[in-house]
Image (cartoon, rainbow, N blue to C red; front, side, top):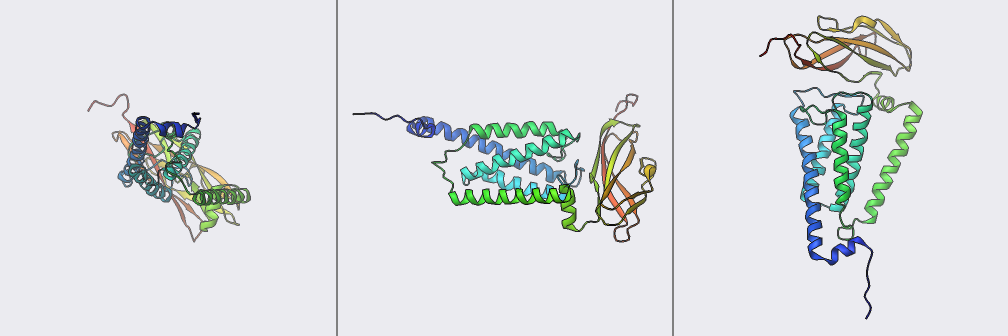
Amino acid sequence: MSTTFSSDPEIQRSSDPAIQRSSDLWRRFVSIGVGSVLIAAAALKLAGWNVSAFAQYGWLLTPSVQIAAVGWELLLGTSLILGIHRSLTWIFAVVTFAVFAGISSYLAIIGQANCGCFGTIEASPWTAFGVDVGALVLLGVSRPSFSQYPVERSVLLGIATFTATTAVLLTFLIYSFGSLDTVLAKLRGQPFEASPSVLDFGSDVAGTTVQRTLTVKNYKNTPLRLVGGTSDCSCLVTQDLPITIPENSEAEVTIKLRLPAGKEGELARLVEIFTDDPAAPKISLRTVARVLASADSPPR
């Protein structure tokens, strides 16, 4: 009588009930842990929605994208915790954290101080990147048994087709218009925009004057003139104004912010830039900074 051995790890695992139970328990532990991280991140975003200005860059972390991210995190996190369609949910989780890691590394490379990933809790993009990579590692070592939890081929084919079609379409639009920001502005019929929509000045001591550069993009086929802006004791926008931006071009505007003494903590301000366009006479954006106590401040 001959004995047949299999090199398939899934078959080997399933041949030993104790090992199978241990593997299933580990997978459930990872799924619940990763799902809890997603739900916690969504809850922190919601908790900080009206009390903290998120650090933003272009369209990536605009409020509409944040709302979509919260909804997706809640849906995916709940599915992971409940063990719904385990193989398919695992695939979505891997793709999600891979995308999150890409966004986090991008924000870190461009110098964003706070990723806004955890609402009121300050976290640098590199910290968020570490969390994303850690989740990917855990998901990688806890891959579900696709023989035990099969995914229909038609479902995978549909996901792959949708992803490929979307990627090709976005690539074509970006190549045609130059950037994703321009594509979205054209689709919305937006004549111009300021980027980032929330300007993060980072952290510095009270009494310090800090500055950042704002990029104003003119998507119109006619020139855009910026005629003035906010100018008070703590914020100055008018240094580079007035300025004329040619059609389908962009220009940089320097924003200076003086961090007030005696107001340690997060500082958020609304800044306005006035234009000569009667249909859109002003550009509004938020600034956010974290004011640190100066060295000569009396102890509290």
